[in-house]
Length: 91
Image (cartoon, rainbow, N blue to C red; front, side, top):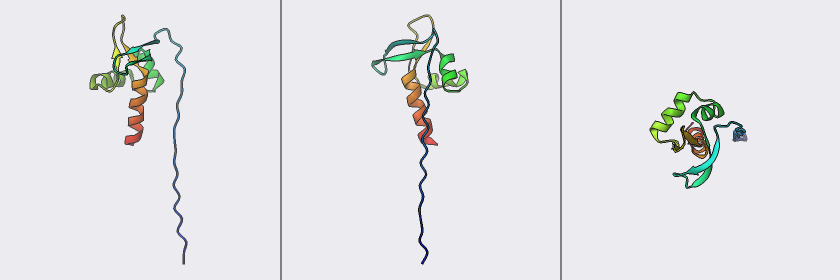
């Protein structure tokens, strides 16, 4: 009688990065109700290796939190991390 073995391989991906731009601030996110790191759309695109247009599309779809209190648009980095987790789990 043959013995059948079942092998399960689990892979996890961890990404970390350091934001050292003048266009990033620690500000209040009205959706998260917490102080989060807010970055410009260009810095968010560079950090997540996506085109800037994709970041704007996610903003239009309501997937990302943003504030435009200052002179420019700022994106909540916590919403980017949450969106990336959803993309990974869908694959």
